[in-house]
Image (tube, rainbow, N blue to C red; front, side, top):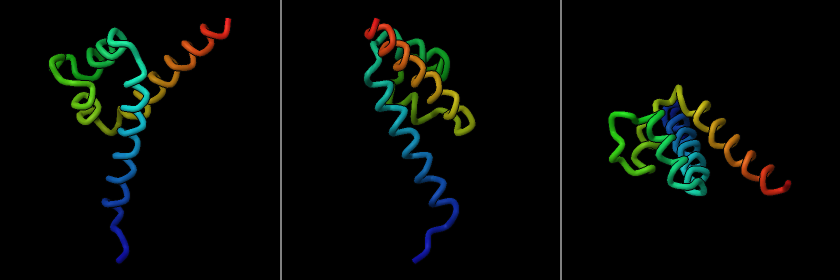
Length: 80
């Protein structure tokens, strides 16, 4: 049976959130807290998983970019 566009889209966003969560789990608690302040400032008691689950779809690309840059910066600093 062929999947609907909405099913495909939902799966895509689930995968994006999973990737974002994997990146965030490598970050120190201080960076995770900063991330939560940016994306869930009214819910700082949420876990990082809850925070990622509640990020608006429109914000996911930017959130991924931020985490990617943080990881790249750490790698660059480690190689100096």
